[in-house]
Structures are given as structure tokens and as C-alpha cells.
Image (tube, rainbow over all chains, first blue to last red):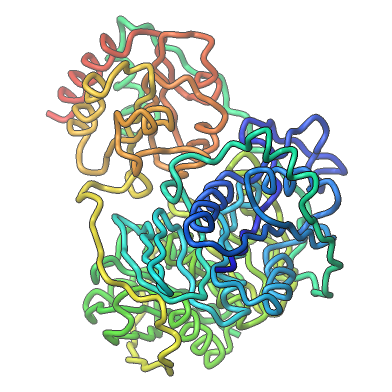
Length: 246
Length: 324
């Protein structure tokens, strides 16, 4: 079984967000980057499947050299090899086309992404790859089991869950539940990761479909109106009469 | 050039989001001085379809074919792209729901379009086509130009008002071309998580954090939500869901659900940045916490520094008085 897990390199969830270059560029100074949390869970499940069923597990990222520590972390968690497409990830279609280009040659049985990256939250790359490769796809997967050539998946939907069966190959995006906790690399894994292959591939040409003009931050809230706890009922009056929210 | 909107249904019914989405797409059509075309997929009767006319729907393509009763993003995308081409649509609007997020990227590939996910307001301009969308999990916005010939947007719930624009509706039953391979992912079972109002649909949320002490004691939020009424439900923070005091589908925040209610009660919630990212689109935030320095008060409009177990019963009392 050949598995590909697509990894994005994102600011830590606790990072304060600010911009430079007149709001165009995310300010990476003093920011810790991590594997996007849903992808870390998808990777953890992929490792479990590989350990049980055999095969290989490759991780891929579209990014400049700065993303290599993130790929090394995925290798330390247990992936066999890594591919970095050497390009600034301009938008989701750009990233999907780069990954699809590689996947076309490799014939993976399973391609996994996270439900969304926590920087642009598009949740688009997995479906785009599936469309480019003419593969079935299942999004927001909270459970993934393999039985022979078939996968049994549970996806979250509005108001519940749907159980889905699909033969390999397919694309799926993982979310909470696909693995209980992200795997923490062991010291041995960290040592071995340094020697595992990390291939750098040049990007294919893709026209720019979108361009960020400027980033803005949410407007700061006005002062919080404080009500004394013994006058708690006053709050309901304010919400009803002033905010008209109750 | 028309504007196309895909309006999904829930067991054959539309909900407030559907009408918000129609209003939003109809306003874009007006900005572009063009007509609005609607696509509905699934078993929706004509009377229900006609309710969309109140918010600007004129021509509705209805795909009412059993094969489409469950989501196959491949088949849905093919049908929507087919209609978009037939109608010469250069803007296609989806809701940013599980279904919208699954289908819109595939349509983007089919039409070599530009996609903006999570739009929170009308485009700033249509020529050039510039939208404002959420980025960094709600911690920022990205003003983005869509440069491809076809523009695809997914629209965030609760970020647009209902705008009435009564139109005469014409319904065309549509049979899209399908192939066996479009249905390789097979739905075998659907389980309803609960009959409760979803956190993303509620107008008012009563949300509890670790400050509410235990699985038993946190039930005070159920009591308060019940008193407020049927437009209100309960929510919680990540630690509370992880501790299993509350079900995971109530988890609101950066790695849970992002909500935008009219009113959000944060009770016993300190306001970690990941939680704030999930709630900062709320119109009003009320914070109740014992720690006056908790960051939640910086995000809140109204605050009470005090013990929730003393404050909330008073609030429940006051709401009951208000309702009577």
C-alpha cells in the first residue's frame, strides 16, 4: 500500500498574527511553524495503517526551503521519505496542481490531507487533487479503516456522520477523530529522520488564479461594559434593550 | 454572464443559511447587472423551491435523481459545472458547509476558475473581482483578487442579512450526465449525531469552559439555553470537549467549529487565542469569569467578574421574567 500525506507548514495555533510589506505578507519573525494540526492527525493514522498493512508512506509539501524542518518532523514521526516542491504556495489550485503532477507518476493508493490548513482554512487541496486525478474523495473524515482493497470511512456532515465505502485509490481529508492524538516523534525517530530521503522537485508552471492584495486584522472591540455580579439581572436588561440581542 | 448559486437542502428543506446565501448571490448578480440562476440537488418539492423566490431566485434547476440523494462530490461538481457552462455563469456561489467545501474545489478545477473560500461580505468590486475572506482561522482577513475568468466563492454562514427581492420562480427539472465512476465513494449509512440545533445554526450560544468545574456542573449551560429558547443551543471549549464533559460537536474554536451567532455567552472561559479565533465573528460576546484579567474580557462586549454558579441562576431568573 502506497500512501501520500500532504503536509502544510503553518504558524503555531497560539501565534499572534501580524503582517509586513504593507499588509501583503505574513510576518514570520519569531513565529514557530508546525505541521497543520489536522494533517498531523491524518499522518498519524497513515502511520498506523502502514504499520499494520505494510507499504510505504511519503509526505509532501509545496514550500520554500524554510519548510524542511516541518517535513523532517513528519519523517521523525515515521514517514519513509519526503518530497518538497520548491515553490511559494501561492494558492490552493497552485498547490493541488503541483501535488497532482507528482501523484500522477506514483500511483498512490491513498492520498491524505487535513480537513483544512489553519492558515488559509480553504480545505480545498484534497478535492482539487482528486479532481485533477479523476479519483473519488471523502472530506472531513473522522475514521478510516482498511479492509483488503476497500476503505471504510466515516465523514462528518451537517448534523451527523456518514459511513462510506470506497475502493482504493482515493483521496481523503482527515479531521479530529481520525487518530486520537498526534504521534510524538521518539528520539530514535528524530535521529533516523536526518538520514531519510528528502527530495526537492522544481514546480510546474501554473497561472496565478488569485492574489492577496492586503491582509487586515479584525477591528478591536470597544471597551467591555462591566456589570457587578450582584446586579447580574442588569445584563439581561442591557442585552434586551441596548444590544437587542435577547 | 450570469451568477450561479448552489443551494443545498437538509432532508428536503431549506434553512436560514439558504436564504442568506440566496440574498448574498442575488446582491452579487445586481452588482454585476446580470441574472441569478439557482441549482438545487436532491429531493426538494416545488413549494419549497419556490420559497427561494422571495430572496431573488428566478430560474431554478432542480436535480431530483435518487443517485444524488447522498453527496458524491464528483457527481455534484460535474452537474454544477455543466449547468454553469450552459448558463454562461462567471460567478458561482456555494455555502461554506461540508457539502460546499467538498464540491466547490472540484468545480474550480473543472472550469479552471479562481476560488475564494470563507467570504464574509459582498465583493469589494466586481471589476476587478475582489473579495474579503477569512484567513488564519478568523484571526485575520485577506482581501483577495480573483483573476481567472470564472470566480467561485464559498460564503460563511451568518455573514449576510436576508434581503427580500420577490421574483416569479421557474423550475426546470434537470438530468445531468453521470457515469458509474462518479459514484465510487458509496454512502452506506447516515447517523444523526443529535436532533439538537447545530452550533453553527444557532442565533444564541451558551458556551461553557473549564471554569464550570465538572461534567455535572457544566449542565447549567443546558438550563440557561433551554430558557432562552429554540434559537439557542450550547457550545464548549476544546479542553471541555477533550475532558468529555461535553460532546465534540459542541467544540467551538480554531480546531473545532467556527461560529458567528448574534449573541455568545462565554461562561467560565478564559479566552485562549484558539477559542477566540472561533468566536470573534459573533455580534455580541458576553463573558462571565472569576478572573478579571482573563483575555476573554478583551474580546467581550459585556462582562461580569464573578462566580458563574452564582451569576447564571440570576441570569436564568431574569430571562424567565423577560419572556413572561
